[in-house]
Amino acid sequence: MGNKLRTYINSLYELIDSGEKIEDAELFKQELFREIEFWQHERLIHLIVTFLFAIVTVAVLLVMVFYASIPLLILFVMLLVLLIPYIRHYYILENGVQTLYVMYEEITRRTQPVCGKWLPKEYGIKIRPFDNKNKE
Image (cartoon, rainbow, N blue to C red; front, side, top):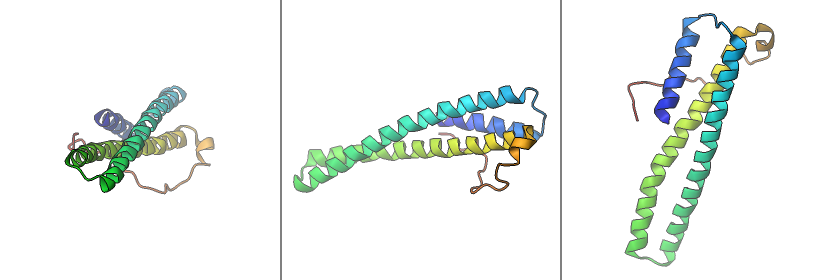
């Protein structure tokens, strides 16, 4: 998923940086909005899974405090080892969706100057393109 999101964002960066005029801007924005909805849904699912996984990990830790045993320790370590990639994946999804929001605003600003004038001139965050060299 992370690679698919990176590829999509990099292709949008290429389009924005090229300065090409978008033929059917409304259709392009609708497609981008649909893609944002897809990634928002993916992000929500991963947030729920990560949150529940973290709750189970903490619950095992609490049980382990009262009933110290080797099997509980092994279970806790296994859960912790799996929780770290879940958090990393959610982090990638969250930053990717935030990047898509900024790109949608930029495309709106370029294609509809009247509507775009109400968008902020400066973003609260600076988002850099994903680096294709760092593959998951």
